Amino acid sequence: MRRLEETGLPEEEPSDTAEPAEEVRPVAEDPIAAKDKQIAELTDDLKRLQAEFDNYKKRMEREWSDKVRLANQRLITDLLAVLDSFDKALEDARKNSSPESLKSGLGKLHKQFLQTLQREGLKEIKAEGKFDPFMHEAIMREEHEEIDDGKILEVFQKGYTLGNKPIRPTRVKVAKKKEPEELRQKEAEQDHDTQSQEKEE
Image (cartoon, rainbow, N blue to C red; front, side, top):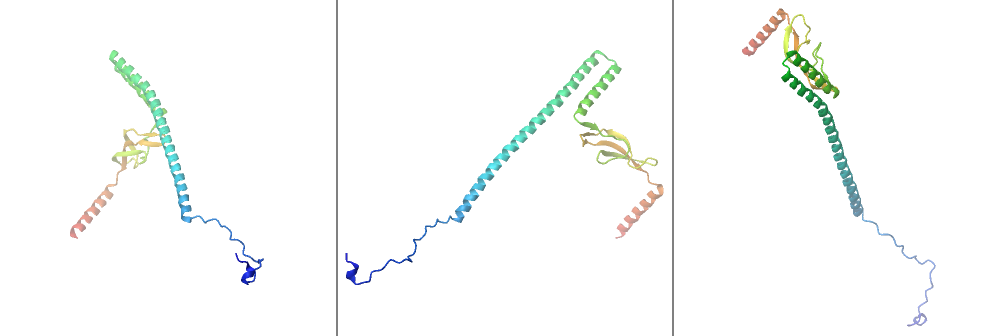
């Protein structure tokens, strides 16, 4: 190897301002890959939450079904006592032909059955006074001169509420205020005039 002196070229002196070695920088993560990773994580979280909610929903449905079944069981157990009373009444009716005895037995049965339903929250809708469209159903209307309009005249079928909710309205006959004869004639004339005008047109 030839020495520098032999080449005749001046020997380079080491420079104090030499450039430092290039720093090794970490490779930047691909933003699309980062988003894909985040989406995958969120999707997994969502699937897990969905599964947990489905399990919760099924558990609530099972618990509700169990509660309904237990409530029905209690009601049926109470009604069995009424059924026993019916059996006893039928047996007594076969042995004893007295109408008074049968009437008394039926009255007791009705009372026992009604008390059983009342314990479950059943209440009879009162059908006194004025007609209430939320509680009553008007089957008939009857004109009266001296009775207030909307007054209940007769009950055809009893209505009931369960708690505060009506489950069957009371079917009733309702009073309708009788219109004076003059007013009726005037309305009839107006109807006749209207019909005449329609025919002319």
